[in-house]
Amino acid sequence: MDLGLAGRTIVVTGGSSGVGLATVRALLDEGARVATCGRDAGRLAEAAAALGTDRLMTQVCDVRDAEAVRTFIGRTAAESGGIDGLVNNAGQSRMKGLDESTAEDWRDELELKFSGVLNPLHAARPHLRASDAASVVNVNAVLAKQPETRLITTSAARAGILNLSKSLSAALAPDGIRVNSVCLGLIDTGQWTRRHAAAGTARTYEEWQAALAADRGIALGRLGRAEEVAYAIVSLLSPRASYITGTAIDVCGGVGRSIL
Ligand code: NDP
Image 1 (spheres, rainbow, N blue to C red):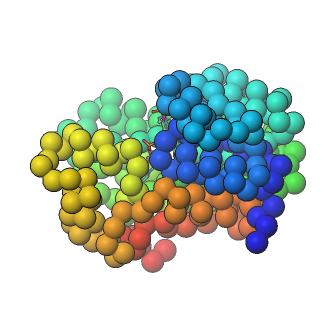
Image 2: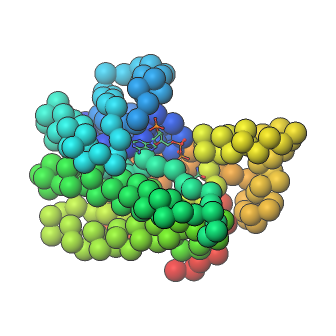
């Protein structure tokens, strides 16, 4: 099936690694032009070299910095002639419970999650409004609906972003902009390789992952792959998904227990 993304321009924040990188690759495979950002110039350059295409634009930009995001999005629109899609993916989670979470942790977590959606959205909105197939996808987590005390700040922030995504879908519908979410379970990316390294365990990464999947009760018995998330994101970006807005798709191997 032709997803109708060839020649369209999509912004993906945090595309130098994991889910963002897999999404950039999938969009390029569909013939789209892609712009992506991250904080680390070296990682961005490495990703760009691996992808090897002139349909990819990269820029160092922290999504918490509204001015830098405006510059990044403005440059994308100027070079591409418009923007059709936005994937708010950049970020990370904070593995801390109630007693370890300081006031700074709460502030930083809420700032990252909310500015990570709102800064790119505000900057891209005029360009999305001009597109005939505008779509925003917010990368979220099943934690939004199924909080974990060991990730207390992230769970609360994720719930807020899911709520915000619903409001945005209604607020932006008159502009012809669809807004949806993907809610991830445990996806095998840099986040988990870093945690394996930090755990100082004698188990190999594969053994550690298998134990993690069993401990968390993942129905499919394994962590997800970044490409499996990219598939859901790209589907929601496609003009063929023109009647889907305000919804959230779980990509979690069955770890989500919520029926809503
Ligand atoms: P990775 O750590 O593999 O990739 C994160 C990407 O975001 C990198 O490109 C990173 O680049 C970039 N990034 C991080 N912070 C910022 C920032 N402030 N400004 C701009 N870019 C930033 O993570 P994943 O692919 O695993 O995660 C992608 C998204 O999915 C995140 O929002 C994460 O919280 C969410 N998620 C992931 C889950 C998982 O199990 N993997 C589970 C649930 C949600 P750089 O560091 O150079 O800035």
